[in-house]
Length: 392
Picture 1 (cartoon, rainbow, N blue to C red):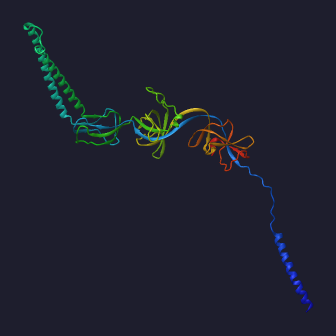
Picture 2: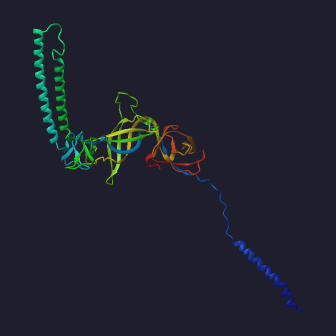
Picture 3: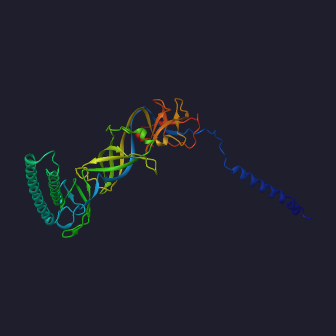
């Protein structure tokens, strides 16, 4: 064998192995080096508010529908044809107290008065004649009679009959005049017409409904209150024969695309709790609901309103955002060493945006009001103080 070929046969595998080793070394040498760093724990930031005791008025929220103080059917007491109708006798019409709304043709009742007056005159004549006969009978008995006279001899029954007929005639005349007055249907109060069922020229029998009307001097709203909410109200419940002091109430509603409010007062409570809900209904009144002002539209019947009833004033309470407490009524506090403390609080009530705490906090303590996914008692935190109004 040629010596050169033999050397090539020996060197070629060695060269391949060296090339492979060089390539492997190059790959290992070019791998990026991982820099080892010491892991440091992240201290979370939390928003806190510094709490101070306050005097808070614990108003109570409710809702209801506006209704008139009084709603009645205007009914005829005598029959006849409608002779006159007031211009206000239409749905939505306003009328004053004692205003004439409708007149029934009175001619038949005028005739009845004349006939009753004639009967009265006849009864008076009979009575005068009978009184004269009684005097004559008494004189004759004194002149001719003997012993004790009988009542018939002195015509006492006839006199009693004449007196009774006179009273009956007077009653008939009074009734005829009463029926005549009932031809005029007047409003028992100032109000509005809700609906009308009678028109000019229509014959109405006695007892027919001509309109449904309601009083406009005062509007009322029934407001349901739970038995728990009664603790926040000063109500003179059970004070028989005493008016007491009932709280003020503010009614709010959106009308014509704008928010409006009306001031009123609770005037009474209903006699018993509602059978279905177990709530007590308070009745609020607003005077002159149709009086319009610069910032007050009329308070229309049937309007749904939100009510805020003036509650009791209590001292030494703490007000917190709802985010400050968890479902177990616990709050997270930050102490002087910036460590977290979890504390059970005594909650007096929950409102839409706040929680009122009656016990469990001290003045000046810092309460966490921001979200903290993992809260462990004693953990280190960074507290960022914020005003209570700016807290989330």
